[in-house]
Length: 370
Image (cartoon, rainbow, N blue to C red; front, side, top):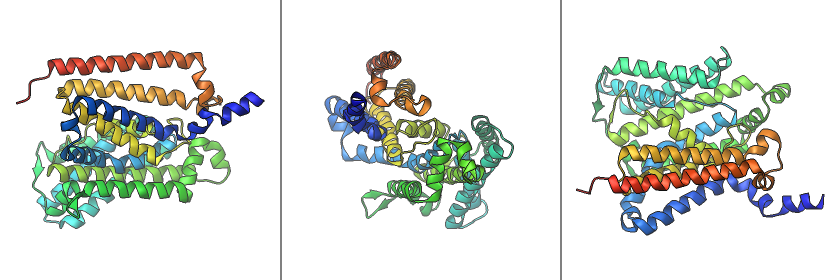
């Protein structure tokens, strides 16, 4: 009994509640240290840091909403198509029907929320599993975008759109970063201080018990998907403003990037555990990693391979760290003593070694700078 108490009050017991945020922060520090040795002048110049923040800001609203979806044991694979379709419709309203940009932006967000509502209804009313339902809706939304756009690239939008995507506040703070941080603050308040946030965690922890206590599980799951759809539309709007253009094939990897950032940030895939701050750290981590690969002049295909390895490594580690959510084990201390976890650690070390090899190969095979 004494040893158990000492273990729970020891270092592992103290850091376990903060693993969700400490993990990505440690990896961020490792990337910063590595780039500080290899490419300090290029990686840490102000313009490059600004680019990292701009890239991360694009995913912040979606990561906030995906935190709620995953916490309820859900998943949404349709966010890239929602972003593209809502932005395409907004573009047509502006370019062909002379709708004012402000009204078109509102319609864009409402369309995203409506598509999220449709996702929620497919999942709750027709009882289609989240994975299959949102994957099928992803095909539907992308198909509509392709039909509407007919291969066109719509470009040159009003100043309001470009300000949302790449403008600046007070001449130094990027507007997308402000928007992203505001959505995260709103998400944090929603999670910590509202009934919806408490019900989200309760539903993810035990849907059956939540229903028995009077919580309308299906209704709150629909709320989460409506929020996800609106934030996906905001992501599509920000991407359109950033590029000052949009096409039907835009945002193809939004779902993978956002889900990876949320899971790496400590939100449990098994539901019941959420971290908005962890999602922010996960978004920053992935943006820093991709920017580092670009800075090292590693070709795009090697970037994809390296990104996939890091995502697998991160998700594998966090899945095992969250083992007590799955089978009631005693937490991080016992997990580190588990022989099975040692096997995972060996696998993680192998994946990290593979990543280092890939980076070296990428550097050797990269084209010389022009």
